[in-house]
Length: 486
Image 1 (cartoon, rainbow, N blue to C red):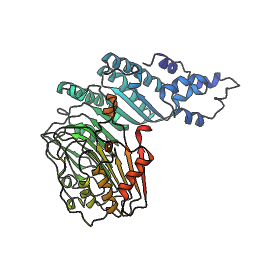
Image 2 (cartoon, rainbow, N blue to C red):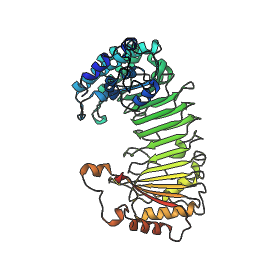
Image 3 (tube, rainbow, N blue to C red):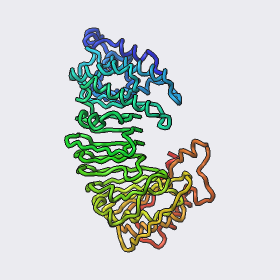
Image 4 (cartoon, rainbow, N blue to C red):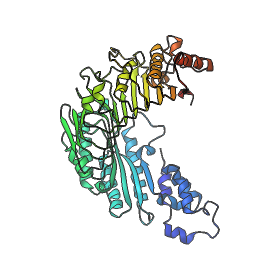
């Protein structure tokens, strides 16, 4: 844990005026550097190191208060290594130290320049709202702070969260914003954890009041399974919406004119989790889900209705059964401007040819990324997509990536099929990745034969290239990347 010396170093620094008066005539070599060079150096290190190195020189003593951006993370004040789970007393002590750090950085007359951005990560502990709130609001009202990136964290695991806990966090969050409304004036990024919106007007809080918000992340937040949530915010500045393990029933994006990126990882609704109406700026969409028994397969074409400009699409099946119905031409409108398509989390035993149905609807794709999944889950069903894609070409496809590549027959057959489908293919990247689950067990991935091993030697790689390109016209590169060795 960061000891009190960190705060002492901050508190013991003289004001800029006093240092200038008492500055010795012959400065050390560090002090001879100009302020812009010193700031360029100090912005490359973390806040704690910056505070501790300030004792090296009289000039360095001023620099923490001249930084244009600050990142103050409560986790930096926890014991090292972090215990798991993190004890409530440790969280309390960390917030005590963080509060002192914030107070020191906004204390006058030390800070003379405007802080363009403050990244502040705190725990939702009610007793500290009355300390942090006035400090941040004071900096905003006095013009010292321009943009605020606020993350209100909670260490409770989703499986251990109950409704009373999530409702309490929601009430604490609502109370904080109501007590310190100046925060809304410069809040550009917001992350909330384990918040239940049952009794709150989520739309009013996040979209009517947070008028400057450009990035919103909700982790394990609940608006009610089976309920329809609508976002209709024509004046919103929101560019990025990141949802992780959230329960919204169904989310309808009626109007978010500046939304550029939407990431939704794991939903709990039975049917399609969202729909689009007016999202003219949406360019990047990431959907990831491991379907549960109660969830139905969805029609991707219906989900994407209302989107016309997506250029990057990621579909992650997390090693489970596919959560989408077979479609091809129905996706043509939504895929008309698609440049990069990533299909992730395909069980390693599944055939890959079915993915060409998506390419049929996306003639403008330039990069195709396929990722297989090694982990074993019960009751998988191999995709049965019987669609006639013969004779169709993807003339713009120039790069194919296969992540967690193994020289299995289904992967080799798919790669050969792509050579026929994409005559202008320039690069094939076959990549191996470390398996976190296997690494945790201290053993290699399950291997029943040599085909399950990534080709590492030159001879093995040349053998794979021959099996892929034999009889095909291909003048591009085949690149093997073993990420486990990086």
